[in-house]
Each structure stands twice: as C-alpha cells, then as structure tokens.
Image (cartoon, rainbow, N blue to C red; front, side):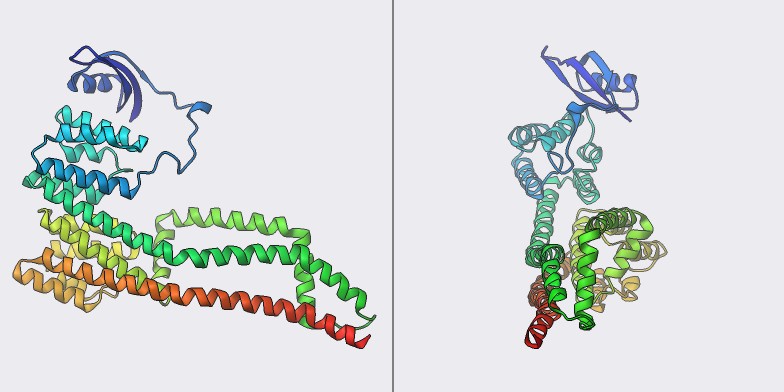
Length: 407
C-alpha cells in the first residue's frame, strides 16, 4: 500500500486536497471516483528524507483515551437520537482538537460516504481503533444496536483508563525516589567521595590498613571518576537491547512469564487481566460475537502473552465441543471462582451478565492490591536509601573519626 496526494473536485464543484492510501494510482483514482470526486491531480507521496516531514515520536500522533471516550459517547448519543452516521461523524470531526484524530475521522467519514461499512472503515486505522473496538462496532452494525455497543465501549475504555491511572499514581512516587537515588549515587561517587578519600589517605599513617568497606568505596569512587561514561553507555545500551528483546514474540512471552512469578506483582497483573478479560468478553458476547471470535479478540487485548496463549488454547477446546468454563477450570492463572461463575452463566444463558459482575469484583480487587503495593513500595524505597546512606557514612566517616582519634 502507498499514500497518494490528490487534488479533486466534488459534486458541488468545490476543490479538495488530501491523501489517500491505495495499492496503486489507478486504485486511488477508482476510490476517489467512488467517493464522488473527480480527480484532477494524483501523485504518490515521496518516501525519501524530507526535513519538513520530521515528526518527533509521541507528539501529534497518539490519540488519548479521553478523546476516544468522548468521541464514542457522543457518537452513541447522536445515533440514538436518530442522527445519520455520516452526519454524526462529520460533526464530531469538526469539534475534535487532536489533529491526528481529526484526519483519521475524516478518512473514516469518506469511506462511510462511499458505501464502506463503519466497522470496515475503522479497520483501516488499527493504530487508532483497537481490534476490540472494531469487532464490537461490526457486531453492533450487524445487530442494529450500534448505539448500545458504543456506550459499552465507552464504559470499557473508562474502566481501562481508570486502572492505568491508578497504576501510574501508585508508581510515580517510587519512580521519583529511584531517580533521586541514581542521581545521588553519581554525585556521591564522582564528586563527594573523591574529596573524602583524599582526606582519609592524607590522615592515615603509612602501613595502616583501612576497613574493607572503606577500601571498596574508594575503589568504586575511582572507577566512577574514570569510567562513569562507560556506565552511562552500558545503561543506554542495556535499555535498547531490552526494548528490542521484549519486542520479539519469544522475549515478550518470557518477560510476561516472569511477571507472573514475581510475588505481589503477579497478583496485580493477574487481577487486572481477569477484570479486562471478563469485561471485554462480556461486551463482545452481548454484541452477538461468537464465543471463539470473542476469545481470540479478548486474548489479543489483554497485553500478556502467557494469558493470551492460555485463552487461545481455551478457544480450541471450545471449537472441539467443550464449554469455556471447562478449560478455564484447569487454568493456573484464572482462579476457580471465574470458571464456576462462567459455568453458571453458561447454564442460565446469562454469560455476559455474570462476567460483568466478575469484572466489577476483580477491578475492586485490583484497586485494593495496587493501593497496598504502593503502601509497601514507598517505605521500602526509603529504607533502601537509608541503608545506602548508612553504608557510605560507616565506610567513609567511620575511618576518618578513628584516624583522627589516633592522631
């Protein structure tokens, strides 16, 4: 696929400029004609280096969850009020402040105007709309309940955003302490300790053996003064290697597996994943998506490869004729209560209702664990800082006091 810049005239005689994605120039021309435009100029965008098109990662690209929630809720309200989809999209496009999101909505609106279904139009923009979002919209269109589905999507997005916000809030203070510790380490070892070691060496008598801890601190200080740049390079290189490793399927699977083995942290990861699974799966089921398709879409949306693999294996068991509650009952991640509640839902035909209750329960559980984790980490980090300061004091100030008394 390539991007083509075009200049075209619509049915009202107005000139329009923009870009369109197509396999080739002929396909781009056909798409524009189908959308009601008469192409004047079509040329492929250059892919070479252009300093005017440099974009800094993270700026002007990302569509915030808040923008998505507002868009989804407003679109649901307008459709419920009987406003046509194209008109609703055009209205929301005009009031969107995010330029990237506005361009995406403009492209989606043009596709819908040309006869493409709303779900298929959204599918062309996977960086903005998740597979869960797309599949639920498609199901809502097929069942004629798009407004209800959009309301559920907005609720789901708000729940996800709330959990992420609580995790960030819980980890912000520990991260600040870690940054302070790293900065303090560099300042002490590069500027403070060299002055103190000179003092210790000048006071110590010839043949006097310094304590092991003091000698270790002096060696560390000498290394940092001479090779601090090597440590910085090693940290940066390690970060790059780790990011690339975790970007591979095997690396991500191994990392997620490790997360599920770390005490306390594994509880947080599991509870959040279970809550997301229950809410997303329930929403898809209520929209009329098949069990196997709902499982596969939900598995991809959880963000943990180990749990994703387990759910996709459960999907295979369902295809073979088992109820979903049966493979989940054998799970090492999903607790027995989930499979038991799911079994009740399957028996009564209210799987989506039961799973929403499970989602509410585990979201509350996740909130409680996150709060307790923050309460544990904060004093632990302070303790680590205190121990580090104590070691430095004993290693450096202790010998100075001792040598001074001997003098």
